[in-house]
Amino acid sequence: MKRIPISVLTGFLGSGKTTILSSLLKRPELGRTAVIINEFGEVGLDHQLIETSEEDLISLTTGCLCCVAQGDLSRTVGDLLARRRLGQISFEQIIVETTGLADPIPILQSFLTDPVLAEGVMLKRVITTLDAVLGEETLKRREEARRQAACADGIIITKSDLADACATEQIVGNIHALNSVAEVKVASFGEIDPMFLLSNTDTRNRDHNWSEHSHIHGHTDVITLRRSEPVHAAALPLFFEALAEVYGPRLLRVKGLVQIVEVPDTPGVIHGVQNIFHPLGWLDTWPNKETGTSLTLIGEDLSLEFSDALLSLLNEEVSLAKELNTAPN
Image (cartoon, rainbow, N blue to C red):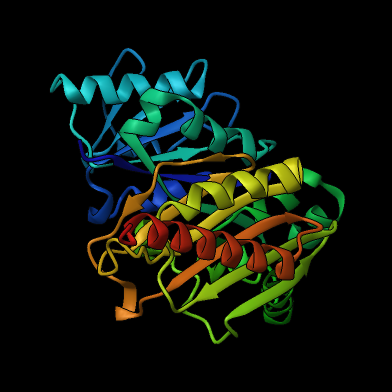
């Protein structure tokens, strides 16, 4: 069964999430999207978008579906998937807008721990909005905002029309220092290219060395492991289990693409939150036709050297075990 891609839109209170979402939902590219809005968030989507309402499900004029989570988020996603299987509703992707005070880690974990959801959805993107006027101060004062930014695949700078050009340029530069692997875009009057939300993460499209290590505010690290040689499939669960054992709650997120020895022509998609990892997903083709493995780890006090050596060691052990098993007696 094909899993439905799910993206998370997060950002601190007043950072412009709903404005961005409302603008995106007017675009035809998001015409078959189910949107879940946390009940404690700013749920006031542009009323002109609303066409009909049945119970907790709202049909929008663009063809999107919108619902307000009345309880457990996993249950809400599961309900949408069940309705889709029964043919009651139709959508091809899901966007979750969180509350402004939400820590994204438990939300991402919920998609990975629930066996029904793990089978039905695949995490695609985490997008964080950041206010160009108040964003710097918010990052300094609020741990939630720092975690929202640290876990992001993409960061949207909002309200640039209210800030001078120098301030906007400065916050963009600071964001690159805060999260070196997140793609940063500046929204123009609440407008953003829909593909920024819909495209797959590929952290390799930057001019970095094969391994990198950057430091984020609040002692948060971003490390990226890169290798041109394929990795044995059996080495990956061993690697993730070891990472969870060593780093524990200090490991916030793991994401990236991996080239598997057994299927080298098909890119595998990795998503993990702390000690929980999503089943391996697959892309049809390699982005920019660039093969290889690129895994990004985000967390506190992470070691690039240890993590890189650990992956190499486990991959070599699996390779050796395969050679011994296939060697003639």
